[in-house]
Length: 145
Image (cartoon, rainbow, N blue to C red; front, side, top):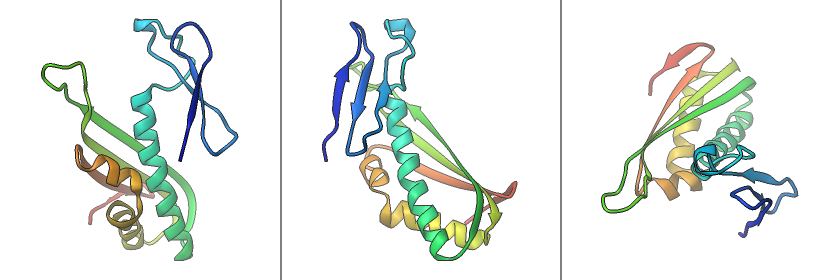
């Protein structure tokens, strides 16, 4: 896998391309000279995690003939500074799955757990350094494993 980032201005705005022809805009915060012309790199990590597990869960639920009417994920990450550096990696990440439709709650929970434990490569990448938790809100009701 390869991605290419091309600088778009004299500051921090980049356009990134992967295997898809759709570009992704990346930029820094205005506080350090960015122009809000794209997502922040650390936001992209959380977006990648959310996208990875969302695809897994949708594939599993479709195979089980569950009718998904709406699907949203909220990924929240807490960062912690590494002493002696400026690095602030994610230490705790929570993924809240918010689904609506004709979906069996136990099947949705199982699909989420399968993604977390077996399928999602982004989870595998982040797990060694981050505690990743998840929750399910199905048709407005919180489901517990």
